Amino acid sequence: MTKDLTRNIAEEIRRLKKEKNAVILAHYYQTGDIQDIADFIGDSLALSQKARSTDSDIILFAGVRFMAETAKILSPSKKVLLPDMDAGCSLADSCRAEDFKKFIEENPGRTVVTYVNTNIDIKVLSDIICTSSNAVQIIESLPREEKIIFGPDRNLGNYILNKTGRDIKVWNGACHVHEEFSLEAILDLKKKHPEAKVIVHPECELPVRMIADYIGSTSALLQFTKKDHAKVYIVGTEPGIIHQMKKAFPEKEYIPAPPKDSTCGCSECNFMKLITVEKIYNCLRNEKPEILIDADILARAAKPIERMMDISEKSGL
Ligand code: 13P
Ligand code: SF4
Image 1 (cartoon, rainbow, N blue to C red):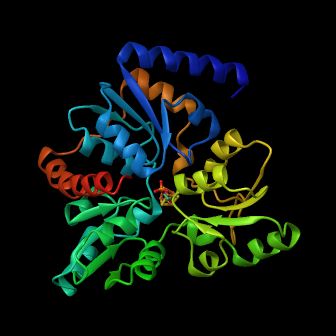
Image 2 (image 1 turned 180 degrees about the horizontal axis):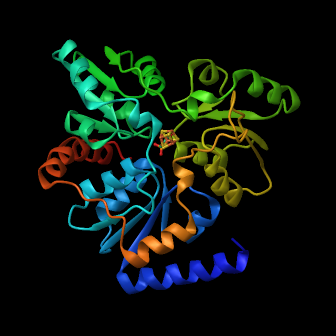
């Protein structure tokens, strides 16, 4: 798309937002042009909080399906739109409800904590939800003797297990983006840029986490680059976040951590990148595709999410 066309579409989107009292929420993994037209940009937790508190009639979610579903669960009376229903998540798909149900039955008496990156049928099976921003606080809010099941991400699960020292059975799922970072390629980059700090998301594999200078959720990584004094960062998460890092400190250098193997040679999330400015425009104009969920399922999925929201609020997150 030409720059002029993008500008015209962006203007039309702004007009439609006003006319329909709509808000655009975008995840940090969206492309820069989408982040620039969004009303609010954030990580999974911040976007959930925003979806819950907005007084707009329509929430257009520029992100993936589980995020839009979470917005609908938290704001059931609002119309929630997702510009492309194929925007799924490999991590969510690595945990199917019938298998997870079996896992829970095989490990009875455990509190089921799941990462928000799940399909809604997993949320219904959960006691509490967490995001990467509050996972440690959610686990620590439970009594020390409580035994826990954590799913679906094995890397985040093992990270919080080590951090909290709690009895946690971890489901064996993973995100295809964060699992793919190459330790060797990162170490090579470190040789070329010895002053660079390696910052990674907790969904990365252990060897990558072990050489990191800092581990955190997407927004924690952004905050770190804002406060830290290094001039170069090797960024081990989806590179969409670099748009905000560059906006905050354009004079710093941000190098995307390379993947082991990928067709594009980059670490973009193909699901996140299904959303485009053009699709946002069509979606807002036609008010579809819309997230529609059975009222009973919505109510059941709301319980573990509301529990997370309460604990987060109490922890000042
Ligand atoms: P955040 O919790 O950092 O937003 O992570 C979302 C995600 O999809 C990670 O892959
Ligand atoms: Fe899912 Fe991974 Fe994409 Fe995040 S980056 S939306 S966990 S596939």
